[in-house]
Length: 335
Image (cartoon, rainbow, N blue to C red; front, side, top):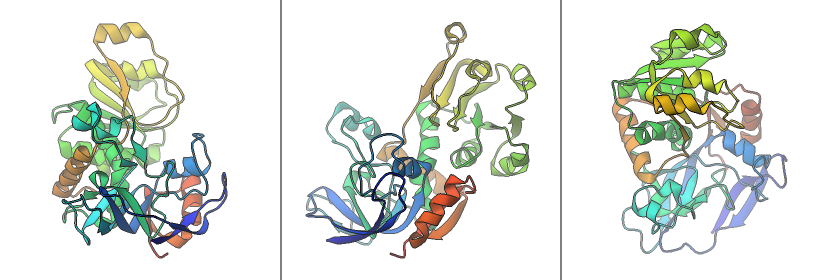
């Protein structure tokens, strides 16, 4: 099958029309006709080979929504025409300890949708059937794409850290990840505190679900709110005063990172005394993805998006790189 796509020929070069042959469909794989695809900052990082693992020509796109075109001989749970989504992961081995325990996203042999293969800025995309997740009728397919990476990235820590509705959770950074975290946590029932160094975002943060809004540049907040939070979810990729944020946690509190800061340096003694921990997580498993979609559909949660035609993907990347996206970009396929 010949697939139309947009690809960058080399590091940092603009996307241009590209075609490739998909080859024979494996028994456990599916082909998805792409209808919508989110634009994630990870796509931009891969485009510029920031992580030194991009293979060119590079077709971005890992926040994919579309309809099943065809299924492999062993696929029984999906049918052609069914609307599904695909995120960062496109395949895992399905037999290792992590996969059989439901932690497919931790599989050592896991494959990224845009790592060593062509992604969703294309007419179709291929993946293992276990990673093509059906989208409930209660979830809008137009805005669902960013849920499969950005949304899942902030939903997974709620599950992994056993956050309860009575917990107080802080969210650092009100952007592409943080705005979805606020919506999830508010509907989860938590007390939610937003941290931002942009005071103008307070009104919007409260509309998104924050009960409290704190300016991270105000040193007085760290004393006033010391020992008050069960988890702080860091969605930004900048280095912070880690000891100060750890001081905001209750005993057994979690400082959870999903933003790729350069390093975390913290005093050990407060961690020991307060039995606190620092951790992080990648996107999420197929099971957690399905759970997120069910929860989002029940509570009417969706990301704030801006739409571009897929043919204008270069302009969408420029919009994202300039920090102008509010808060996620979705490409509508017109290839």
